[in-house]
Amino acid sequence: MQKRRRKWIGLLLLAAAFGALAGCAPDPSQFKPVDPNGGIWDRFFVYPLTVALDAFNELIGSYGLSILVVTVIIRLLLLPLTIKQMKSSKAMQALQPELKRLQEKYRNNQQKLQEETMKLFQKHNVNPMSGCLPLLIQLPVLIAFYQSIMRNQHIAESDFLWMQLGQPDPWIVLPALAALTTYLQSIATGMGDNPQTRVMLFVMPVMIFVLAYQFPAALSLYWVYSNLFSMVQYYFLSDKYRAKKQEG
Image 1 (cartoon, rainbow, N blue to C red):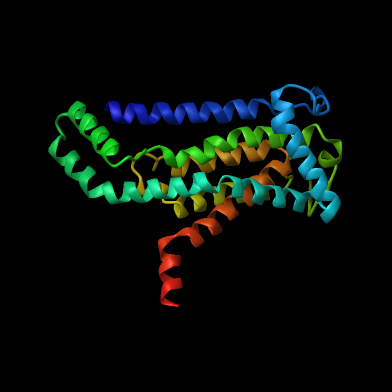
Image 2 (cartoon, helix red, strand yellow):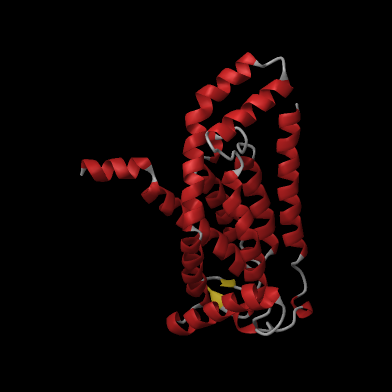
């Protein structure tokens, strides 16, 4: 019972973080221009993203594609964390037989089960919640992306495909893609194999859809790009790919 309660508390905290993100959304007129000499947030988060988006737009001629380039750069910077997450996920999968044995042995003593489970994790240096870390680390990036879009009139007024990047997707295509790719990315990264994070497999796509429905299309575009990059990245880092490469 305590284990389940702790899992739902973690889920609620993550939902609250997304709620805070959603709460930053509404009227663009409330935002001041990005100040490169301002506080820590503007100087180290919003301004670098704004400069990067503008620079790649001048080079490529499209803010929609500029977001793609910046997304790839961000995900490459997060690559060490992603590799660590994959190792932890594999370790969790390897521990599943032992975890099932403990659950069977201490099924009538939840406190003892919790203690032995934690000992097992510590023994093998496994963090069961590490699968959520890349998502949590991306939250400041998402907020900074949002502000760099809404505080840059050129981005907010730019068009890409059928969308205006500063407004939500009128056809709800991007929110649906964001939710779908979030689900597929969770499957690809093995989130469903971990009982500690399995509930997130279904909750996260719903959260992402709700956010993408009301957020500027540019932010939803970033999320779709990021999910697609993750799936490709996990494919090339997976054991199955390495095995195929060795066979070839």
